[in-house]
Length: 461
Ligand SMILES: C[S@@+](CC[C@H](N)C(=O)[O-])C[C@H]1O[C@@H](n2cnc3c(N)ncnc32)[C@H](O)[C@@H]1O
Image (cartoon, rainbow, N blue to C red; front, side, top):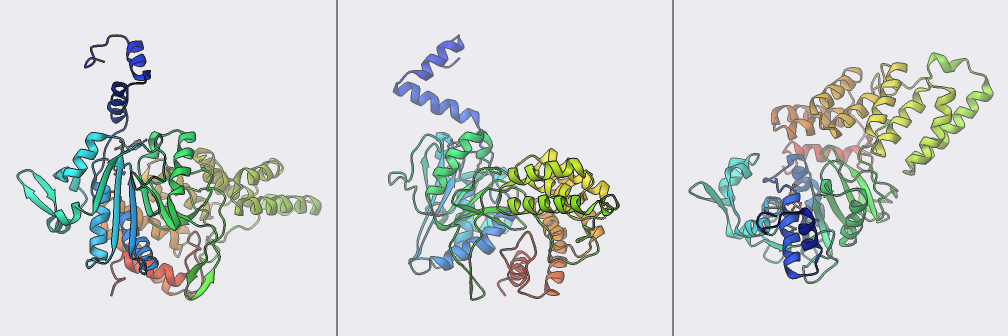
């Protein structure tokens, strides 16, 4: 308002409302101030490791006959994110002359787009980047670092607004993407805007393509064409509900997931351990009349079916009367906690977890879920503490080791991350390779072991 020499908010509002070129410009100025452009290279090492070790190799393999790869960093800010991807691709495909690799960065902040195109950064942008990589891909200029021309030319930047613009679009090249990163952007949108943007984004994703968001940014949204894929480092989304996946030579149909879940639903059915399967009926329900027990069992089974189909609200409706009659029913409390968590009602989920633990203090599952809730609420210390409790109760509980590994990785504590992953790997190696470990049930134990090996840097040997 000062710059425009306006004194009343109403005047400014009318100026914005006007249908003029000046108003368009002002909107751009204003919008740029409404979101922070915070970004840095390899932000979230876990997700970048996941892309480097699993997602990008899968996409490269899948596209090797047409030799194209199309990637979009939506809400790229000052360019660190798409350039990090370009560096990963340079490592994975050093000889790529016959490949057509397109990496696109879009942001609604014009200044940020200008900065992206220049590709010159201060040391703060490198805060978590390995110094060797920085030296390999940047040239020092006084206090700043300029990105190598080879990497700079791999990325195209455009101004754009994810909500207002229409896409697929040939003008901005937003179409047929194999991988879309839209991280730390949905946090600026309310629920209905997230749905609109999500639908548009998914429309430009190729079959089998991946969408990666910030952790827990889009939970409880309708999945549409997306299915949830759960990796220790991150939950990611893949387009293509019924594309057969080739695994170890056998085709597997992907389950159709109805709703996007932020928190996995880990019933560790294939994981042995003293506490993992401790779901025995508590004392309070053991002496119930048979007809009542049959009724509760029916409700529980129905709730489980709803839950498996991703209809968490339906599951909760079945569990509510059951819990009114049997407030100490461990299985109902446990399932209720998971349903709440998957609907993004984390505090309610935590309450049910605690009630479940009051009934069965040796159960692992509620601790695991509490860890996810704490993580979602940004309380990493609490998350680690719950995971450690889960491991105390069940020392072979693989998901807790993997999650701790991912949390330590995010904290840049590579030594501990390694130790956790190495332990998980030992347990995995002791299991039959065709088994699965929930919540990673789309990977066999053999595939999960390979994944963990890659995270440990042993995968390429
Ligand atoms: C916190 S930065 C995230 C940068 C990068 N994705 C990362 O995670 O490091 C958020 C960016 O989203 C951009 N943004 C917010 N709303 C947008 C919209 N509707 N269209 C395009 N960009 C948007 C902001 O301008 C800002 O640069």
